[in-house]
Length: 269
Image 1 (cartoon, rainbow, N blue to C red):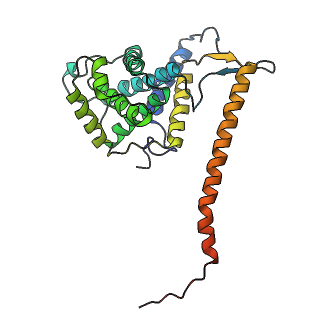
Image 2 (tube, rainbow, N blue to C red):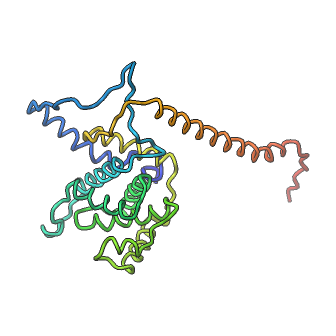
Image 3 (cartoon, helix red, strand yellow):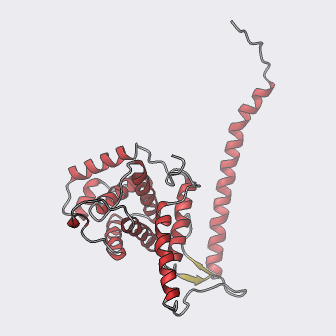
């Protein structure tokens, strides 16, 4: 599955592709109707001032990340394939605010991280691809809940127990949660690995989604204290990667020493 974005960093994310149609139509409509974009509120850096938000790929902003992830889910539902079923089957498409409140409630009550939200989206798109199913108004809550449940257990050090989700969602039982988790894993073919390159791709595609839909990240002038903090984090990461590189070099020495070993003639029989 080389075209699966949840496994391969070069494959385009599904949510960003699904959102482009709506973004183009919105821009076209604004152009035809001569709709002004309004007062420009985006801040731009200058020679004297640098504006920067507090969200990075290693430490995303929780609120902004949940907004972007739920917007991605919204586009999945809005542009899902509709089959010939009774009209009341799909009911009404949930709007972005409704999806955001549902996910935000779970993340707030379970104290989940922003990284967990990104992994949730990875698992969701992996499920849709592996199982060849679509997310729609009738099943989106269970799919999102299953993805959050799995992501919290894989990503966070202190995982939330299934019974804890039952305290948050009163209309679901522990047995139902266990069955949903088991079924979710089976549909994922027990592939819960998320490479760093895939995680980074989803993070930056979510940033692109935010820009296309005017979901601005809070920008603040770069202060001296913030600059020193960023420099310290950068130095810490640099030292970490140096240590990993040295460890890899030590492991490779044993293979290099094999060059000097005298080889015996092969015996073919």
